[in-house]
Image (tube, rainbow, N blue to C red; front, side):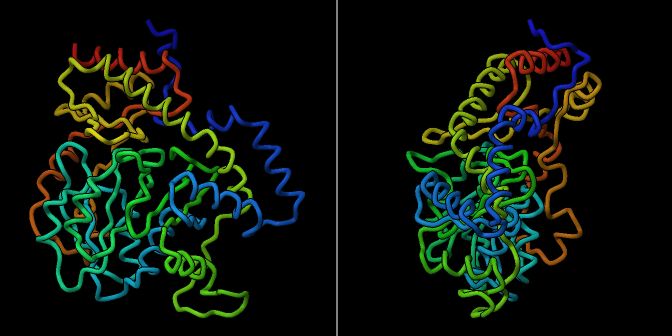
Amino acid sequence: MSDVSAATPVPMADPRGEAETMRGEIVAAFTRVVDSGYYILGPEVSSFERSLAANIGISSAIGVASGTDALILALLALGVSPGDEVITVSHTAGPTVAAIRVVGATPVLIDVTDDTYCIDPSKIAGAKTAHTKAIIAVHLYGHGADIAAIKAAAGNIPVIEDCAQAQGGAIGNRSVGSFGAISCFSFYPTKNLGALGDGGAVATDDPVLAERVRMLRTYGWRTPQFAEIELGRCSRLDELQAALLSLKLERLAASVERRRAIALRYRAGLSDLPLTLPIQREGYSHAYHLFVVRSRRRDALESHLKARNIGTGRHYPTPVHLQPGLAASARIPESLAVTERISGEILSLPMFATMTDAQVDRVTAEVRAFYR
């Protein structure tokens, strides 16, 4: 039986709680940065970039200002420009498609699979044209997309991995982010590897792409005050966030393992209910950034949990192709039936690495009470 009071909120995510467990180390790291006098692109960023690249299993990682900027810079590094098309999904966070629009390209939106909710590789061939310049494969909720099938369907079109929700996940014995031509990460505070503010990274094994991203993140400079390439911008991970992220990177594996343990506990308590629980395909290691269930009574379940101080989320309530600010220039080759169906059924239950067993049990008990 849960020992968490029904009056005590269980949040959807709790970045503050994680920070509290590391308060002393965070203060020491921030003090070190303040005392160093290096605040932009100094030793903390360089050290974190090396550690992140090693963690992913690739040669280069480049810290940038946000996950959205990571996508923008990846597209620019690949030479995506106005008139080009980029294939991705409608069932994703808006920034995936916003980045395509920022560089002036046309988003081409295709459907997702009914089990992982990641891009459906069988839809890629029918979406490609002579103008297709890249494919963004989103590893959603923590489960990797079928990257082998995606790359096979892509042919010579470069694949960008959007790893914002899957850091710490793997496909076979390789980390997500190590398969595509280039990969992108977000360090938004609620992510598996979260900063105390915005931050992101681009990772690649291609030294030419890596150097291009480094130049693009700082005005197109290779050397200070001399712009060698066009479309450079200011998008830099700062020293304070890099120092914190280095600390958290050391704990990432343990943090993801705790998320997996929470997921197992949820499964044990919810498996006999009329819910669709997250799947994990054979050969994949789920990172459980989110624990997303599907229910035909989603709205009523959401209201029930809210009334009992339990946080939930909808990831995502409105598909991109139904959002005027993102869909205006998009091309949709065929029906997005799966996307539209699941958008009315998905509900994210609380999931964070510092979540206690008692909190998991309370959420489980309230879900069960709803179905009784």
